[in-house]
Length: 285
Image 1 (tube, rainbow, N blue to C red):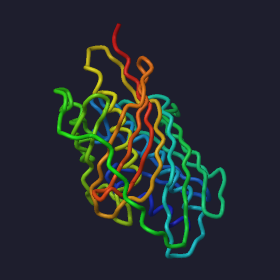
Image 2: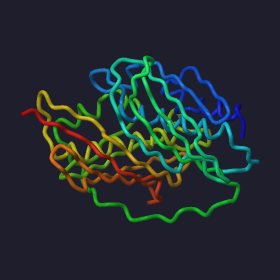
Image 3: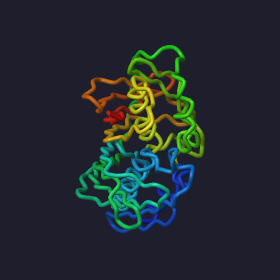
Image 4: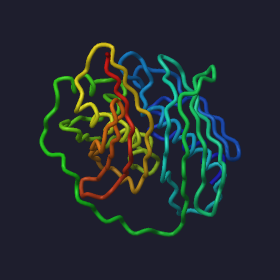
């Protein structure tokens, strides 16, 4: 791998879909700018949390690739993304930076952060990136979690119609009793260079699914405040050219804080990603 390959990673289809702008890469470092567009936002022009996590992951990926020196063929992918959200950006450009803290034989540990152009911190992440040359066996399928039916609350249409969710193609299939099921159809625009769904959009799917399992228990009310507190995603094996389904379940709740678990599976049950989402819904008093 090299600086040029790292720069190419910032131009994968999903990065172009997001609208990633200027990219600066040095040994073990990366800086990427994302100009604001309506397609990366929630209602109210707030940059979607999945977009922030995507930029954190992409900065980590690019920074790791800038230092890897490994001959082809190889497997190079993010295996963990741990995100903490600090604040929100409304109608603003954002900037993501990644720095390699430690590079091992296979694993690179990268710290990423996203700010607005004035330096206001929006989110931080630890990214674990893995490169290997050994061929690996296909992962065994697992049983799909329970989430049957196609029941959606009346307000799900407005949640699912937000700019980024709609642009990415995420579809709500079920939201009931602390559970949610979301479908992400495959499209070239949201893929990586290998033709699989990009880790950034998979992370955004986990974020959204976890939020929806919380929303399945709460009715919207004027004056309520909502946000994702953190997500932790592990990436297993994104299948090339296939749709994926996210199954989310609220594990427990402490007043306005919801703790949710998400599994993302391929159509044959192959695990693609799994993670946890802490979501906050503050109801007006």
